[in-house]
Image (cartoon, rainbow, N blue to C red; front, top):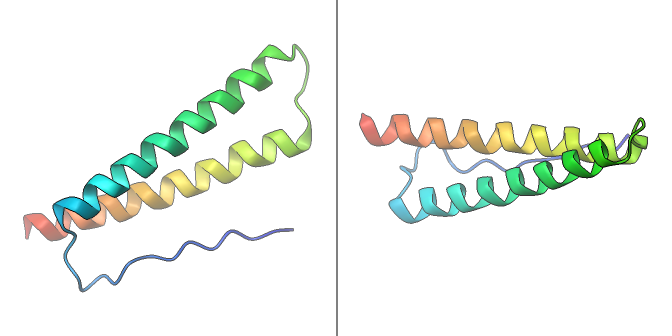
Length: 79
């Protein structure tokens, strides 16, 4: 099984507005791609192939990781 590794930025460094914009842009791209794959799966009219389901699930994991970094960065900015 292939593992996805996500490099998280240094927690001690506060996120800048530019970093947050980059994270938001990344999140937009990831969610758009996941939506495309879900709609593709739905259009098949039958159970999608395992590879397609795996891609959707992997994107969900990356989306969650990006959201966690954004939440963490937003908390750092409020402190």
